[in-house]
Length: 182
Image (cartoon, rainbow, N blue to C red; front, top):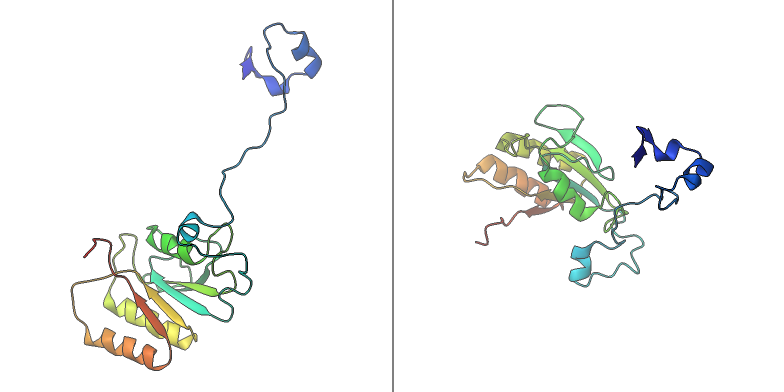
């Protein structure tokens, strides 16, 4: 609220109390977005966070996607731009990373090391060669799980070899099932 071009909060309280046009005087309280400690999606499936200590302990996960802007996700490598900055310029990778570690609460996998490995560009597209490099990065960095939330129409024997190599070294590989209900 402003009076005569001067914000009301800049006026002295005594002056405001004397002004008959002022109806209320009260502190300007801080407000913030509301949420719960437990993400709604985990509550809906009955996930119990009451004993969440050590969730993800000693687990290393690599998310192969568009990168991540989630502060609780570690930088792996950016194979699109060939550097160590895995910032997300698309948003998809950040959304995927939020499922594993909330940027607010760090749940559910608060004790896991989750790495962003950028293999898709700002359009959400990439090359099989970058995916293969991402899988090899996961092998070289002793990752336990590789999460790949993308798909394509081609068939690559080189990608199949990289996946089989990772699997033979004990890495669990998780691929997207798609969003079209098929």
